[in-house]
View 1 (cartoon, protein in one colour):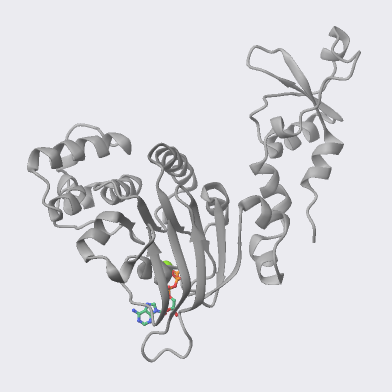
View 2 (view 1 turned 120 degrees about the vertical axis):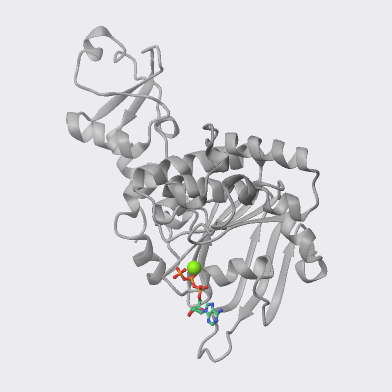
Length: 323
Ligand SMILES: Nc1ncnc2c1ncn2[C@@H]1O[C@H](COP(=O)(O)OP(=O)(O)OP(=O)(O)O)[C@@H](O)[C@H]1O
Ligand SMILES: [Mg+2]
């Protein structure tokens, strides 16, 4: 769906290229997350996808077409863009902000109005009167939701999101991440998202792209990245707690074993082994096991019926990552 091949860009007067031979492929429905130190070329890469920056070399293809061959209006319809620092138009109310691209595309006004209502509901902002407010009358989280709604307005198959949840408190951020993931899953968008936050990358990405000085140091699924960092730079970037980050991505259901004969008795149930839901993360399972001091946990469904056991030794073996 998105293919970047050998993209390079050096800004006038800059000693080094901002982006240097970058290649990346995202299939339809994938979420590629760009991470890396400030100034490593993340925003420049995004802006080359929708031609806000023209590359010096390389090709950008969206939906199989070279973007230099696509008319700008068609490109804007195909690509929604959420910019760093929200970027709502301060002189337009919320409804008019969301309506920007649909009006640019010449939609009839009743259709525009229906779309505004639909999108506000989609991002959880359907409180009465909100659509008529000014951007400065919104909280940071509300403004970021409007930014997402505006990017989705013309139903583009591709979304570019530059730090869409920057400057939010961790709780609001986590909630918006979950909401966005649910929306993306439902609407099946292909997304390139930029973040400074490794946890956000791991949570949202189908592929994490670790960048340094305009180049890709590693592009991998979150699990593969945490298990096998390609080099020292990536290893230090993902941090010494990557084993825990990795456990947070795996579920109890991934490691559950059949109950050994004889354990599924009232006596066994009365021991101190904690009960875990199959959907709990292995990180939470580890916390429960450490707190109880038990060697294994019972895995139970919502009705309390035992499905199997999770052994601490197996969990630790799973969590161990190569150095
Ligand atoms: N319009 C521009 N003119 C000149 N230099 C630029 C321009 N835009 C970006 N740069 C430079 O290109 C490099 C990459 O910038 P870019 O904005 O892509 O980084 P980034 O990875 O998005 O950083 P951050 O995480 O801080 O947002 C930086 O050195 C930056 O100063
Ligand atoms: Mg940036």
